[in-house]
Image (cartoon, rainbow, N blue to C red; front, side):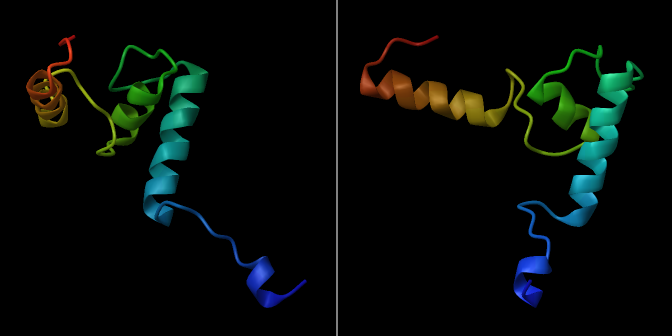
Length: 76
């Protein structure tokens, strides 16, 4: 195997990966600390403290609603 093939590549930083793995362990073992414990992508990110979770009041959702409204698509 070449040296390049042996290197592990990950789309996330090592610190973030560790937080996500720890959050997944808590969700899978039923010891969630920041959510009700359901295994969802949003809960995983909340448990990990990462910025990828989207809550209904998030600015991204409000922005998308305005875009849909301007294009004439139904809101909702």
